[in-house]
Amino acid sequence: MRVMRKQRRLDRNSALPRWLWLGILTTMVVGTGTVALTPPLAQVKQITPSLQVPKIFHLPRVPSLWHTLAGSCEIQVAGGPILFQKNAYLERPIASTTKIMTAYLTLEDKMMPLNRKVTITSQEVLNDRQGLLKADSEVPLFRGQVVSVQDLLWALMLPSADDAAWVLARAATDNHPARFIAAMNQQARQFHMDHTHYVDPDGVNHEGYSTAADLMILTQHVMKNPEFRLLVRTKTHKTAFGVLSNLNQLLWSYPGAIGVKTGWTPWAGSCLVFGATRVEHGSPLTVYGVVLGEPAFNPMFHDTAQLLNTAFHTSWSPLIHAGQTVLVLHIHRVLTTTTLALYAAKPLGAYDVGEDATLQWRLKKPGPAWHAGQILGYARINAKGWPESSWVPLKARTSYVMPWWAHL
Image (cartoon, rainbow, N blue to C red; front, side, top):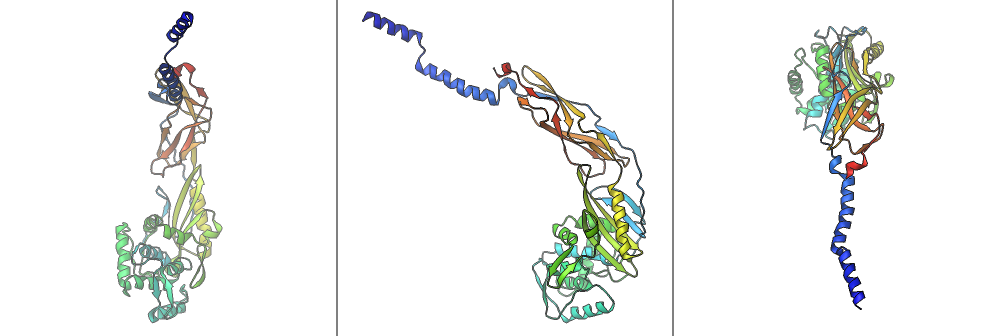
């Protein structure tokens, strides 16, 4: 009996209390989980980047060869530089490109929702017949006919219906179209279209005028409106007037064409405001153009297609090649410093227009391990005056696993 009691005392003295064992086990389980996620020694204290390429690149100027039969012309990158001008500030009649402003004011008018119904009056029918006698572009209108603002806009911008322009102007001003025309001129002044004067909503009257430069200003504004963009990029649409087709042949013939408006009168000649978007060198690029006073309507579309081709083929230099090391990161932890090289997954470059270009980058915070080819940052090169280019991934050159002792 004494031996058994002595053995129990020895067992109790040699063993740790149960509560202490439980605490140790809990610490091991929970603590191990914590170390695996955010080990104190593995936490990044500082990252020192070392740039392996220039931050600023000096670009050459490589001139493009431009040619057009238009009397006036301007080509510009959306949100970017003007690439070409020819008599861009010459005031001249602009024909149905006038309807760009008519459509824009209608879309911006809260009293002219797209579903609003408009009843055709005898005055509109009379104007329609007079327009047909003058070979104007019209849609069939009948007294008492009820049509929506949206259908009138389709008629205005696809077949370029002059009568639709006047119906919209009267509907927006309680049958006072002169007020609508005044609003067109007021909006032009607000857009700083200093060489523009409207006298009608359809552009038939040759006393109205603008310039290629002013129409470019207008285009850059109106193309921010999603409803307007939908109108001008649509090829055909079924309406109360039947199936209407867009007169802008570029929508069928030029890949990436996005609009915007045709025009023709004997005084203005053939006119076109146009645009296209393509992915060039990994980034979307939108180019707008204006031609006024083209000698013929159908050949105008070949002329403008060549202008777009010249714009999209502006000389571009790869400044950083795919696979080239862009940054070396020195990653400082409590007891270790790791060196990591990041390379560009795709080429980075800029257009050769004689401006400076700047390298930008952003980094992800690296964890305790990464593998070769893992994306750990992004870089891009932006040229002065041009829209921002797309980000290109920066990838790890080598793999890394933090040493076991850093987890202790």
